[in-house]
Image (cartoon, rainbow, N blue to C red):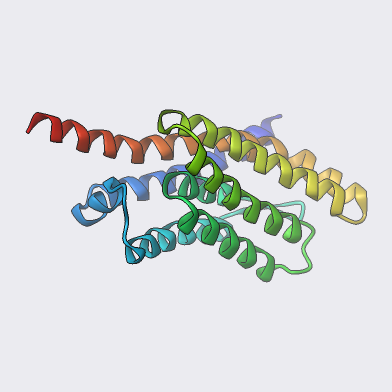
Length: 205
């Protein structure tokens, strides 16, 4: 139990680093305007996609090796970007970070499950962006993140050979990875608060 708590703390630490970086970006005027806008040019979407792709790829490099797997916050970056900014961010982040995860450890037990789950996360986040009310996105983001991490665990359990290795991996990483998806709500609220701040300023003028 203590081991699980320590791994969950490690997930929160890495998510906090992402949140802090995003917060600092939103305090600079160019990025503040970028995140506040509702309609983006193709060039702006490419920039935002690059930011979340970097977050997702960096999450792999800062992951903690556990039983042949990596505890990381890749799904958090993919879901957050896709829900906030739509298909031009969510899908590239999912595909690029998933392929990167696969290519750096092609023979690893969790490489294919992580690739599949990352791509599905990008698609799911895009669907939520298009279909859900803005006020509930933070909640749907958390649920989507937990679902995608749950899918990752299921795929590891099903696809890993020998099967006992997959069971061992899932028993160690399932709790911190799924619970860590709570951080998605904080990232979504951070960016949405910028938009609310813009509307408040406009209302006062």
